[in-house]
Image (cartoon, rainbow, N blue to C red; front, side, top):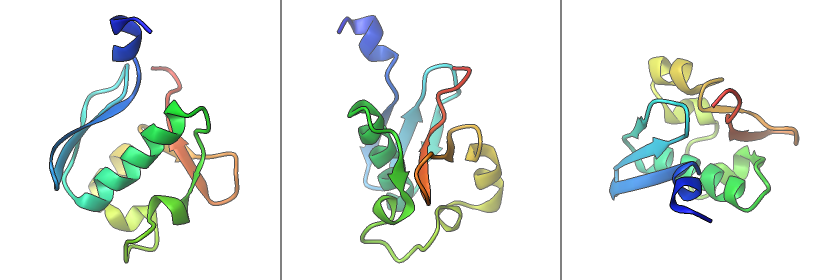
Length: 102
């Protein structure tokens, strides 16, 4: 893997326990401002990097009181990320990073 290729991979840059940035090639960086948001996107990035991009909602939210992804984000942020940064996966009740058109 060259540096250019490594730089093209989606990643979560963690700054603190409640402060991180999602970097997806071809998209603006997305600020993540809570532990659950960071957990969700880190698990999606990890799954993508393992070649199995679909992650079930229950796994994304494991250990959290939040019952659905939408609850982890303010409504205006959900409208921004849904369809842009994440999309429904092929498995039932699953999600994946949206890397289309990036």
